[in-house]
Length: 313
Image (cartoon, rainbow, N blue to C red; front, side, top):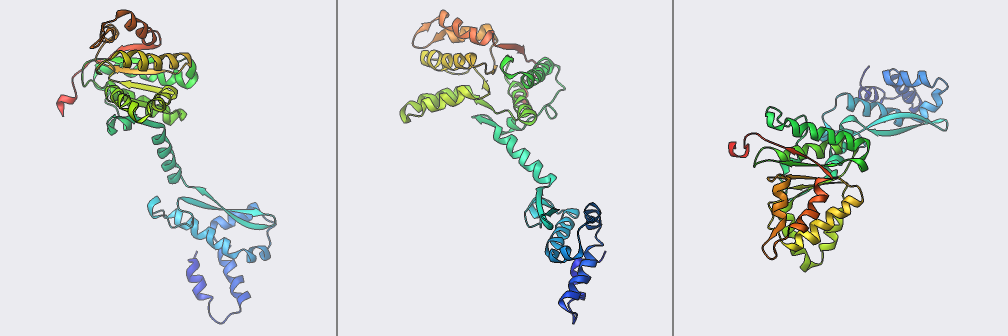
């Protein structure tokens, strides 16, 4: 079919307006998509089509842009990232615009990114997926399987899903596995999650007392559907952090059946030893045991082994 522009130029001579429109319509009716549309709506008369020539032209041009798509950033359609569709509207023609596949992919990516939040966590961790994470190290196998089971169980029944406690030495990939969990939850179920680097977050909470934002921050972290406390045990412990912040946080999430996940260089017994000691109050084993009850019984602990990947970079 000749281009619509060349047809318009050819018809712009001395012919009458009605004759030009009629010949333009005949040219438009040869377009494959218009042919299909008219076959679906055989009752549409030429009079109706003549009254809607601009819409037919807009539809054909928009579809032509999509056929030769230059990419979303250079989309030439009236509504960027959207495809035109013809419709019959009360005996006349109308055009609707629907997002194209590129626009949908972009919106899904943005939506997924908005669901994945972090505090003091490297950006590269937030882009890790189960497809991209390195699976060659056998020391990660158990943790990756446990991570996959967590996502599956959470997808079926969020309120009945235990958290995860990944422990191991520096650089074995604990945090990256958590990043893969966050992306899987966001992509598959649209679940919002938050990962915080625990030492820096606790320091921020101390500073929040002065600007009166402490309660707001604790309230937010308490309610997030999936919380990941990264590197718990690396913080400088005080009775206030242990009892008033961490204890209250885990109590709230336990009562509301919200899963909490952890990474740590300590196994559970070592973490209990860490939580039992503070610079100000010395050894307080009972308080540490109470807190650990909220971790032990509501998580599955998995050791992550292997080489320190940080030292390889």
